[in-house]
Amino acid sequence: MKVAPRPPRPDSETRAEQGDHEALRLWLRLLASTHSVEAVVRRRLHAEFGTSIARFDYLAQLARVPKGLRMREISERLMVTGGNVTGLTDSLEDEGLVQREADPLDRRASRVRLTKTGRTHFAAMARQHEKWIVEVLGVLGKQEIDQLKNLLGKIKENAQSQLQG
Amino acid sequence: MKVAPRPPRPDSETRAEQGDHEALRLWLRLLASTHSVEAVVRRRLHAEFGTSIARFDYLAQLARVPKGLRMREISERLMVTGGNVTGLTDSLEDEGLVQREADPLDRRASRVRLTKTGRTHFAAMARQHEKWIVEVLGVLGKQEIDQLKNLLGKIKENAQSQLQG
Image 1 (cartoon, chains in turn yellow, purple):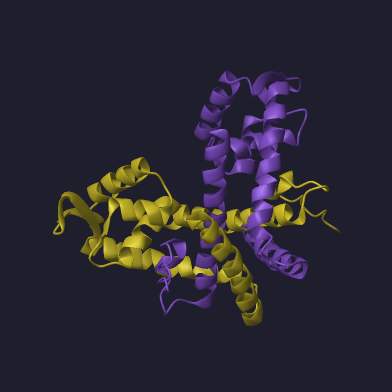
Image 2 (spheres, chains in turn brown, blue):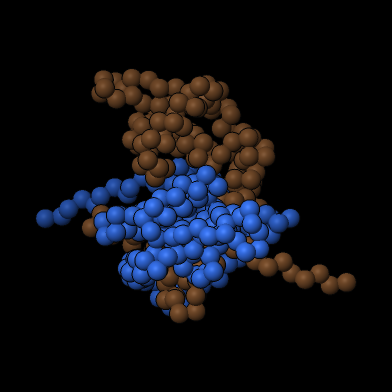
């Protein structure tokens, strides 16, 4: 018995139309593929750790900087607004995963860093996260991965030069 | 006189480390390049139209469906939560860009569609948006665009099959 294929899920690409410029269609595909990988990560983070992408990304940024980061730096790296970063910090501090401390270079500012518990908790999530990413992106061969990195690098570089221009 | 190159802006890719699996590094680059294009779009939408990406994307989904969409459908396509869609709808309805109407197939549900003003307003934004995207992604040649679409398509397809599995 043949099973009819499921119709594709509507996503960012659903709005593409025949007359669209090929660069626009590529952009909608870039968005749709990023969102579909995020959807996998979102579902698994929720199922296995009861947490969100925003919280995972926040901890991931701190995990790379033992001396911690200022709120403004976290905000820039996550590309979320200051308000969201304050809310995330409060909630992660309540759970004992991060701590605020005075910045030795600027009395009015504070830095945030992972606690020991935060470090352990993040390490466990990061191991699983890497496994999920390999499952999804591992569909590409080594050469395809290099090609894709190179093409995306050109886009990123051009976008960043426009932002600095 | 030589000018020192600016250090790269910290972004999603900043957290990549030497030991990371190549699939994870590719994922961080995919995120960083998507975010950098979004940053260009965000800045220009704000400067030229005083609006946000969330509002633009909302109108873009509706623009393709003259009969309108249910709130749940909008929410799925935008991958934002129901609460955000309600807030966006209220605000766009107040400005006369969208209207809610009863769904003929389900009395309890309502559909949202663009008003005539909304359609005109969106068309003006969409023309500019396409121009910005061509400026950023047009750094790639035709063959590179096809290559990139193909590679991203494989990732999207694999992620979606995992979501449906």
